[in-house]
Amino acid sequence: MIDMKSLFALLLVPVCAGCLTAHVPAVSDWGVVPVVSDRSPSPAPAFGVARLSQVVVCSPYDARPMLAGRSDGPFASDAYNQFVAVPSRLLKEPARAALESSGRFAAVVGPTSAASVTHVVELTVTDLRLDCTAAEDGSERREAVAAVSVIVLDMNRRIVGSARGVARVDARSGDYGSAFSAVFTKALDNAMAEF
Image (cartoon, one colour):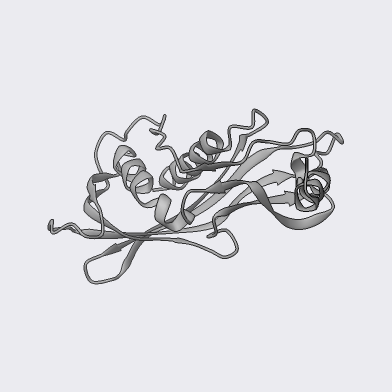
């Protein structure tokens, strides 16, 4: 026998599914799966050994629930799909690995490394969402979107480089973990291509 809370929850699912109304997805917690950059490394690093000092994810994107931009409103939290932890924590190691694989640095170490470095890298994620707005042709869009700013400082705290990368990746398959991993890596690759 179904109690009133369960019945209410079942009736509320189609209403609250946001842009995912085509089907109700299974509840899932996922982390960012490291995606190796498909960009070939540059022939010679532009910078020496760098420390990734911080990864800042701007509000409202630094939260466990995935945000979706919908045609009928600005953003909605997706109760069915969430990050395992806040994105600023999840993205540190994939960011370090992507920066190192870009070939623009001799090496990239984490913030707690005791290694001697010549540069410091700061990343700011200014967009990290699922875009479910209507496309120009009227069809439903479902794309993971990311925008990343990269600042490279020398050891005197002078900015020696900055760039911004933006990317979109198709997420219609419903595998949002892979889509967000791929879009973050692609946005970071696009920023690193500016150096």
